[in-house]
Image (cartoon, rainbow, N blue to C red; front, side, top):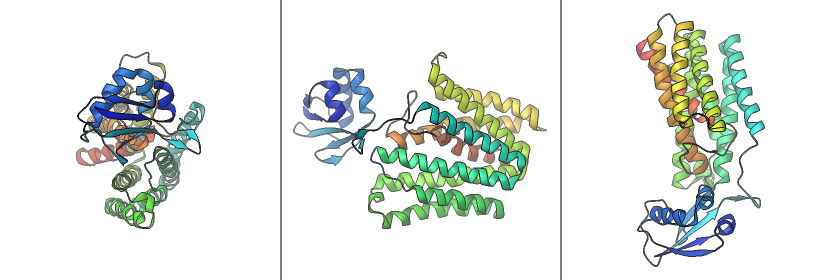
Amino acid sequence: MARLRLFARLREVTGTGSADVPGATVGEVLANAATYFGQAFSDELAYAQVWLNGERAGSSTVVDDDDEVSLVPIVVAGTEMVRSPAGIETILLLGVTVLLFVGNALGVKWLAVAVVLAGVLWAYDLAGASGRRGLWLGALPVMLAVFASVLAAYRFGIPGMAVAAVGAALLTLIWSIFTPRLRPLESIATGVLISAVGALGVGSMILLRLRSEAEMTSFLVVAAVAVTVSWLVAGTGVVPIDPHTAGALAALAAAVVAGAVWSEDLWPTVAAGAAAAVALVAGRNAGSLARSGALYVGGEVPGSLTHLDGVMLAAGAFWAVLRLVA
C-alpha cells in the first residue's frame, strides 16, 4: 500500500494527516481514498495538487508499496482557492455579451474593439484561475495574441488570422524562456493551446463580421442561447441532463432559428451551429482542465468568464463550417 499524506483542508475533512491506501497507480490510490473518505474528500480533491515522492504526478503514474502520495490544496496568500461571487460572474458575462452585440450592430471596427476587450478579459480571467491552482500561464502573451489576431484578420483576412495564430504559439514559447515559472512543460503546452485558441476565436469573429452582419449575429445568438441554457441548468438542476449537453442542444436549436431569421439559406447556419455546439463542449472541457486540472460535467469551475472558454473555440468552428458550405 502507498502512504497517502493529506494537508490543509483535506486533513480537516478526513480527520487524519496520512493513511495507507491500496492502488497500482496514483489514480487508483485517489479513487480508493475517495471511496473510503466520502464526498467531502472528493470535493476537495478537485482543488489539490498531487505529488509522488516530492514530484508532480498524474493519474496514470505507477505507485509502489513504499511510495508516498501527497495531496496539497492550492493556497494563495493564505486562503484556499475560491470561486468568484456569482453576482460578479453574471455582470461580467452579461457585460461582455452586450458589448459584442452592440459592437456587431455598430460596424466591424466597433466589433473589433469589443472583441479585443472581451478577449483580454478572458485571457486575464483564465490565467488567474489556472495560476491559483499552481499552473502558471502568461496572460500577457494571450492578450497580445488576441490583439494581433483581430488586427491581422481585419487587415489581411484569413492569411492574417493564420499568421497571428502561429505567431501566438511562438510568442508563448519565447515568453517562457524569459519567465522561469512558465517553463514547466504543462505550462508551455497549455499556454500555446490557449494562445492559439484565443487568436483563432477572435479572428474568426472578425472574419464572420466581414462576411456579413447577419452571420455574426447568428453566431452571437447561438453562443448566447447555449451559454444561458448551460448556466441555468447548472444553477437550478431542474433539467435531468448535464449543462454541457443542454448547452449543445440549445446551440443547435438556436442555429435553426438564426438560420430561418437572418440567413437566406437555412442549412449552412444549422451545420455551423452543430459544429459550434460540439466546439462549445470541447472548449469548456479544455478550459476546465486549464483552470482546475479536472474535467467538469457539472459543478463550479474557477473563474468569472468560464463560459468564454467554449465560445472562443465555437467561433472558429462556426466560421470554418460557414466558409466551407455557404
